[in-house]
Image (cartoon, rainbow, N blue to C red; front, side, top):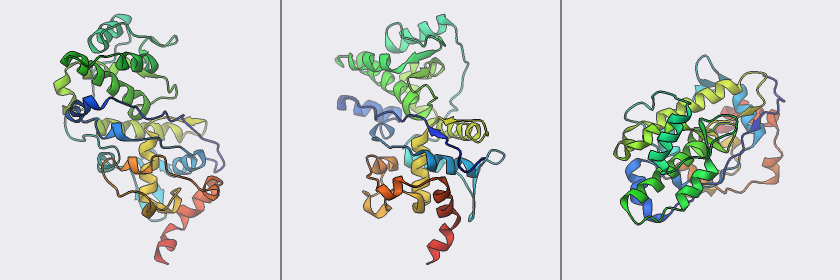
Amino acid sequence: MQPNRNLMVRKLDPPQTWNPMVENYLRATGFYHVSKIGVIRGFHPLLATLVERWRPETHTFVLPVGEVTVTLEDVAYIFGLPIDGEAVSGWTDSSGDFVQSQSHAIFGREPEVSSSSKSYIKLGWVRRVRDAEPLDTEDSVRRYVRCHIFCLFGSTLFTDKSTAYAHAKYLPLLRDFDRIHTYSWGSACLAHLYRALCRASRFDTKEMDGPLNLLFVWAWERMPCIAPVPRNTLPPAEIPVAKRWSHSARTTAWSSNIVVTFMHHIDYMQEASDK
Protein backbone atom coordinates (compact mmCIF):
# COMPACT_ATOMS: atom_id res chain seq x y z
CA MET A 1 0.00 0.00 0.00
CA GLN A 2 1.23 3.49 -0.84
CA PRO A 3 1.76 5.61 2.32
CA ASN A 4 0.05 8.62 0.72
CA ARG A 5 -3.04 6.74 -0.47
CA ASN A 6 -6.11 8.86 0.17
CA LEU A 7 -8.34 6.17 1.69
CA MET A 8 -11.61 7.92 2.38
CA VAL A 9 -13.67 7.33 5.50
CA ARG A 10 -17.22 6.19 4.97
CA LYS A 11 -19.54 8.94 6.14
CA LEU A 12 -20.28 8.32 9.81
CA ASP A 13 -23.95 8.88 10.51
CA PRO A 14 -25.17 10.86 13.52
CA PRO A 15 -26.12 8.77 16.55
CA GLN A 16 -29.46 7.07 16.66
CA THR A 17 -31.78 8.95 19.00
CA TRP A 18 -34.45 6.94 20.76
CA ASN A 19 -37.35 7.32 23.14
CA PRO A 20 -36.34 6.74 26.81
CA MET A 21 -39.57 4.79 27.26
CA VAL A 22 -37.98 1.80 25.52
CA GLU A 23 -34.78 1.68 27.62
CA ASN A 24 -35.65 -1.56 29.39
CA TYR A 25 -36.46 -3.22 26.08
CA LEU A 26 -33.13 -2.12 24.61
CA ARG A 27 -31.38 -3.52 27.67
CA ALA A 28 -33.22 -6.81 27.25
CA THR A 29 -32.09 -7.13 23.63
CA GLY A 30 -28.45 -6.22 24.36
CA PHE A 31 -28.49 -2.99 22.30
CA TYR A 32 -28.80 -0.42 25.07
CA HIS A 33 -25.10 0.42 25.42
CA VAL A 34 -24.34 0.78 21.73
CA SER A 35 -27.39 3.05 21.45
CA LYS A 36 -25.71 5.55 23.81
CA ILE A 37 -22.72 6.30 21.56
CA GLY A 38 -22.64 9.83 20.20
CA VAL A 39 -20.92 11.31 17.15
CA ILE A 40 -17.36 10.04 16.54
CA ARG A 41 -15.74 11.79 13.62
CA GLY A 42 -13.47 9.85 11.33
CA PHE A 43 -10.14 11.02 9.93
CA HIS A 44 -8.92 9.55 6.65
CA PRO A 45 -5.12 9.90 7.20
CA LEU A 46 -5.44 7.87 10.41
CA LEU A 47 -7.60 5.28 8.68
CA ALA A 48 -5.05 4.92 5.87
CA THR A 49 -2.29 4.51 8.44
CA LEU A 50 -4.11 1.69 10.23
CA VAL A 51 -5.00 -0.10 7.00
CA GLU A 52 -1.36 0.10 5.89
CA ARG A 53 -0.45 -1.90 9.02
CA TRP A 54 -3.18 -4.52 8.51
CA ARG A 55 -2.22 -8.02 7.40
CA PRO A 56 -5.15 -10.00 5.93
CA GLU A 57 -3.31 -13.32 6.36
CA THR A 58 -3.33 -13.01 10.15
CA HIS A 59 -6.07 -10.42 10.78
CA THR A 60 -3.61 -8.36 12.81
CA PHE A 61 -1.94 -4.96 12.74
CA VAL A 62 1.84 -5.22 12.50
CA LEU A 63 3.42 -2.68 14.87
CA PRO A 64 6.97 -2.17 16.18
CA VAL A 65 5.85 -3.72 19.49
CA GLY A 66 4.43 -6.80 17.78
CA GLU A 67 1.18 -7.92 16.21
CA VAL A 68 -2.06 -6.68 17.76
CA THR A 69 -5.72 -6.79 16.78
CA VAL A 70 -9.22 -5.81 17.81
CA THR A 71 -10.63 -8.58 20.00
CA LEU A 72 -14.04 -9.69 21.19
CA GLU A 73 -13.24 -8.19 24.57
CA ASP A 74 -12.62 -4.85 22.85
CA VAL A 75 -16.01 -5.05 21.16
CA ALA A 76 -17.69 -5.81 24.48
CA TYR A 77 -16.11 -2.78 26.17
CA ILE A 78 -16.14 -0.29 23.29
CA PHE A 79 -19.66 -1.00 22.01
CA GLY A 80 -21.15 -2.92 24.93
CA LEU A 81 -22.45 -5.65 22.63
CA PRO A 82 -23.01 -9.26 23.74
CA ILE A 83 -20.17 -11.52 22.61
CA ASP A 84 -21.58 -14.84 23.85
CA GLY A 85 -24.42 -16.76 22.31
CA GLU A 86 -25.55 -18.07 18.95
CA ALA A 87 -23.80 -17.18 15.72
CA VAL A 88 -25.39 -14.44 13.65
CA SER A 89 -26.12 -16.52 10.57
CA GLY A 90 -28.89 -17.64 8.27
CA TRP A 91 -29.97 -17.69 4.67
CA THR A 92 -29.82 -14.69 2.35
CA ASP A 93 -32.92 -14.34 0.21
CA SER A 94 -33.07 -11.31 -2.06
CA SER A 95 -36.48 -12.07 -3.51
CA GLY A 96 -39.20 -9.47 -3.29
CA ASP A 97 -41.52 -11.89 -1.47
CA PHE A 98 -38.90 -12.44 1.24
CA VAL A 99 -38.30 -8.72 1.78
CA GLN A 100 -42.00 -7.94 1.86
CA SER A 101 -42.96 -10.75 4.25
CA GLN A 102 -40.12 -10.04 6.63
CA SER A 103 -40.78 -6.30 6.57
CA HIS A 104 -44.44 -6.83 7.41
CA ALA A 105 -43.42 -8.97 10.36
CA ILE A 106 -40.84 -6.49 11.65
CA PHE A 107 -42.12 -3.05 10.59
CA GLY A 108 -45.81 -3.76 10.03
CA ARG A 109 -45.79 -2.33 6.49
CA GLU A 110 -44.13 -2.50 3.08
CA PRO A 111 -40.60 -1.08 2.97
CA GLU A 112 -38.85 1.50 0.83
CA VAL A 113 -36.07 -0.39 -0.89
CA SER A 114 -33.03 0.54 -2.93
CA SER A 115 -33.72 1.15 -6.61
CA SER A 116 -30.59 -0.80 -7.52
CA SER A 117 -31.01 -3.68 -5.07
CA LYS A 118 -34.42 -4.77 -3.83
CA SER A 119 -32.85 -6.53 -0.82
CA TYR A 120 -31.69 -3.24 0.76
CA ILE A 121 -34.14 -1.24 2.88
CA LYS A 122 -33.88 2.52 3.21
CA LEU A 123 -32.86 3.56 6.73
CA GLY A 124 -34.62 6.92 6.51
CA TRP A 125 -37.90 5.08 5.94
CA VAL A 126 -37.23 2.76 8.90
CA ARG A 127 -36.56 5.76 11.15
CA ARG A 128 -39.85 7.37 10.12
CA VAL A 129 -41.71 4.12 10.83
CA ARG A 130 -40.00 3.88 14.22
CA ASP A 131 -40.76 7.46 15.22
CA ALA A 132 -44.42 7.09 14.21
CA GLU A 133 -44.99 4.27 16.70
CA PRO A 134 -47.33 5.41 19.51
CA LEU A 135 -45.66 3.11 22.07
CA ASP A 136 -49.05 2.47 23.67
CA THR A 137 -49.00 -1.33 23.35
CA GLU A 138 -46.45 -4.09 23.76
CA ASP A 139 -46.49 -4.74 20.02
CA SER A 140 -45.86 -1.07 19.25
CA VAL A 141 -42.91 -0.88 21.63
CA ARG A 142 -41.39 -4.02 20.16
CA ARG A 143 -41.79 -2.70 16.62
CA TYR A 144 -40.07 0.50 17.69
CA VAL A 145 -37.12 -1.39 19.18
CA ARG A 146 -36.78 -3.66 16.15
CA CYS A 147 -36.71 -0.59 13.89
CA HIS A 148 -34.10 1.02 16.10
CA ILE A 149 -31.87 -2.05 16.08
CA PHE A 150 -32.17 -2.35 12.30
CA CYS A 151 -31.02 1.28 11.99
CA LEU A 152 -28.04 0.46 14.20
CA PHE A 153 -27.17 -2.37 11.82
CA GLY A 154 -27.07 0.00 8.87
CA SER A 155 -25.43 2.98 10.57
CA THR A 156 -23.02 1.50 13.13
CA LEU A 157 -22.52 -2.28 13.22
CA PHE A 158 -22.81 -3.72 9.70
CA THR A 159 -22.40 -0.63 7.56
CA ASP A 160 -21.66 -0.56 3.87
CA LYS A 161 -20.62 2.28 1.58
CA SER A 162 -24.17 3.38 0.80
CA THR A 163 -24.71 4.80 4.34
CA ALA A 164 -28.43 5.00 3.57
CA TYR A 165 -29.55 1.35 3.39
CA ALA A 166 -29.30 -1.88 5.35
CA HIS A 167 -29.64 -5.42 4.03
CA ALA A 168 -32.91 -7.25 4.62
CA LYS A 169 -31.01 -10.45 5.51
CA TYR A 170 -30.91 -9.32 9.15
CA LEU A 171 -34.68 -9.11 9.49
CA PRO A 172 -35.33 -12.80 10.37
CA LEU A 173 -33.02 -12.44 13.36
CA LEU A 174 -35.30 -9.74 14.77
CA ARG A 175 -38.64 -11.56 14.38
CA ASP A 176 -38.51 -13.46 17.67
CA PHE A 177 -38.08 -10.55 20.06
CA ASP A 178 -37.21 -12.78 23.01
CA ARG A 179 -34.31 -14.34 21.11
CA ILE A 180 -32.59 -11.14 19.95
CA HIS A 181 -30.34 -11.09 23.01
CA THR A 182 -29.23 -14.69 22.46
CA TYR A 183 -27.07 -13.87 19.43
CA SER A 184 -23.40 -12.94 19.57
CA TRP A 185 -23.78 -9.58 17.88
CA GLY A 186 -20.31 -8.54 19.00
CA SER A 187 -18.73 -11.46 17.14
CA ALA A 188 -20.60 -10.58 13.95
CA CYS A 189 -19.57 -6.93 14.25
CA LEU A 190 -15.91 -7.90 14.71
CA ALA A 191 -16.05 -10.22 11.69
CA HIS A 192 -17.52 -7.37 9.66
CA LEU A 193 -14.63 -5.12 10.71
CA TYR A 194 -12.05 -7.75 9.76
CA ARG A 195 -13.65 -8.17 6.33
CA ALA A 196 -13.76 -4.40 5.80
CA LEU A 197 -10.07 -4.07 6.73
CA CYS A 198 -9.11 -6.89 4.38
CA ARG A 199 -11.00 -5.26 1.52
CA ALA A 200 -9.52 -1.84 2.30
CA SER A 201 -5.99 -3.27 2.24
CA ARG A 202 -6.32 -3.93 -1.51
CA PHE A 203 -4.34 -1.37 -3.47
CA ASP A 204 -7.27 -0.30 -5.65
CA THR A 205 -9.74 0.37 -2.81
CA LYS A 206 -10.68 4.03 -2.43
CA GLU A 207 -13.07 3.92 0.51
CA MET A 208 -13.59 1.83 3.64
CA ASP A 209 -16.88 0.94 5.26
CA GLY A 210 -17.58 -1.26 8.28
CA PRO A 211 -17.85 -0.38 11.99
CA LEU A 212 -15.33 2.48 11.85
CA ASN A 213 -16.33 3.83 15.27
CA LEU A 214 -15.06 0.55 16.72
CA LEU A 215 -11.76 0.82 14.84
CA PHE A 216 -11.04 4.46 15.71
CA VAL A 217 -11.86 4.10 19.41
CA TRP A 218 -9.79 0.92 19.64
CA ALA A 219 -6.81 2.71 18.09
CA TRP A 220 -7.12 5.74 20.38
CA GLU A 221 -7.46 3.58 23.49
CA ARG A 222 -4.59 1.24 22.60
CA MET A 223 -2.26 3.81 21.01
CA PRO A 224 -2.62 7.15 22.83
CA CYS A 225 0.16 8.63 20.68
CA ILE A 226 -2.27 8.90 17.75
CA ALA A 227 -5.36 9.99 19.71
CA PRO A 228 -6.89 13.43 19.06
CA VAL A 229 -6.86 14.29 22.78
CA PRO A 230 -5.09 12.86 25.86
CA ARG A 231 -7.13 10.11 27.46
CA ASN A 232 -6.81 11.73 30.90
CA THR A 233 -8.84 14.69 29.65
CA LEU A 234 -11.81 12.46 28.81
CA PRO A 235 -14.58 11.25 31.13
CA PRO A 236 -13.80 8.01 32.99
CA ALA A 237 -14.07 4.87 30.89
CA GLU A 238 -17.32 2.98 31.25
CA ILE A 239 -19.30 0.74 28.95
CA PRO A 240 -19.62 1.71 26.17
CA VAL A 241 -16.09 3.10 26.07
CA ALA A 242 -16.84 4.66 22.67
CA LYS A 243 -19.16 7.15 24.34
CA ARG A 244 -16.30 9.05 26.01
CA TRP A 245 -14.72 9.70 22.60
CA SER A 246 -17.91 11.12 21.09
CA HIS A 247 -17.90 14.86 20.45
CA SER A 248 -14.25 15.03 21.56
CA ALA A 249 -12.50 18.26 20.57
CA ARG A 250 -9.57 18.20 18.14
CA THR A 251 -6.68 20.60 17.97
CA THR A 252 -5.63 22.20 14.73
CA ALA A 253 -2.26 20.50 15.09
CA TRP A 254 -3.82 17.02 15.30
CA SER A 255 -6.15 17.70 12.41
CA SER A 256 -3.17 18.69 10.26
CA ASN A 257 -1.53 15.28 10.66
CA ILE A 258 -0.95 13.28 7.50
CA VAL A 259 -0.34 9.56 6.99
CA VAL A 260 3.43 9.90 7.33
CA THR A 261 3.02 11.72 10.65
CA PHE A 262 0.82 8.99 12.11
CA MET A 263 3.20 6.32 10.83
CA HIS A 264 6.06 8.10 12.58
CA HIS A 265 4.10 8.26 15.86
CA ILE A 266 3.40 4.52 15.69
CA ASP A 267 6.97 3.64 14.72
CA TYR A 268 8.35 5.42 17.76
CA MET A 269 5.61 4.88 20.32
CA GLN A 270 7.66 2.27 22.23
CA GLU A 271 10.59 4.63 22.58
CA ALA A 272 8.25 7.47 23.58
CA SER A 273 6.63 5.34 26.28
CA ASP A 274 10.03 4.63 27.83
CA LYS A 275 10.89 8.30 28.31
